[in-house]
Image 1 (cartoon, rainbow, N blue to C red):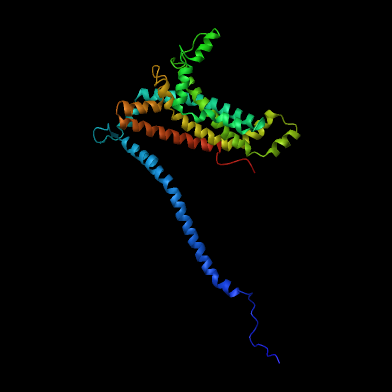
Image 2: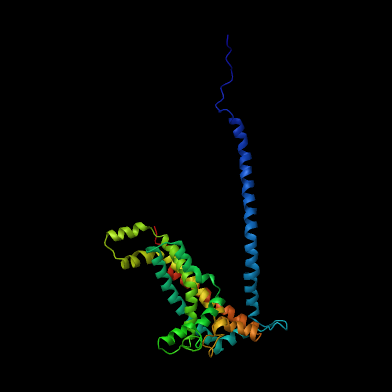
Amino acid sequence: MTIASSSPPSRLPAGGATEARSKPRTRRTEVGGNRGDGRLAAVFIAPALLGFVVFLLWPTLRGIYLSFTRFNLLTPAEWVGLDNYVRMVNDPIFWDSMTVTVWYVVINIGVQTVAALAMAVLLQRLTQSAMLRGIVLTPYLMSNVVAGLVWLWILDTQLGIGNEIISALGADRIPFLADETWAIPTIALINVWRHVGYTALLLFAGLQAIPNEMYEAARVDGASEWRMFWRITMPLLRPVLAVVLIMTMIGSFQVFDTVAVTTAGGPANATNVLQFYIYGSAFGRFQFGYASAMSVALLVVLSAITILQYRLTRAGRTDLG
């Protein structure tokens, strides 16, 4: 005779009680895991953060402070208030250096952007060979100093192979780096030669993000390559192109090493760009306070230009749906 149990049957599956008891423990484990991830992230971020503070943030704050002082490394910094900025505003060499720098920036950005965009489009449409991309990037692997010295020898008026070729063709030799008219365009084109491959690869990466279906649909509608470039490529490439322009602008205003090894600011201050003038004021005449004031002015100019470019080009927004 079977005796029925008076207790109701359990509705929990086998092991249900164990799972229910283990849930709080799982929650605690997840919280502990998140804390561990945060500590690990802090360990990885620490070296970069330390480098940022030591090599960027502290020198920037120190430079801002020195811009209000008279300092020559031999005596303690003497607070002079706005005297350095007043001197800068009334300094004709400063404004001449700024004009030379702007002229260099216009040539460098104009030529480099057009050439890099053309190279990027050709790389996308004609070939996507990794070897060809490596060849395009080769000049960028060379330092600015080495590139400047190589072109200094090539363009030498008497012995340079460039002028030898010009002379062999029956034309007069051109003093590329020794003439006031030719010097800045020549330096700008040297830097274009070195950086155009890197810029082209950045734009090429942006072109790769544009769906091919858009070009195929445009071809079906009978659109020409030129029309597709202006109606599809340029609008969709705008965010990447805007970032490239901002990077190129900042780098162009900071040109120094190419000038230092080719013309040293000459002839007759024709290539005395702002960075070279700041360097000469600091390490040539030991006027670190005045050099810091000009550096702060350059920082303000670059910040204003960057913000204006970012807003005008809508770099943070894309037309891709």
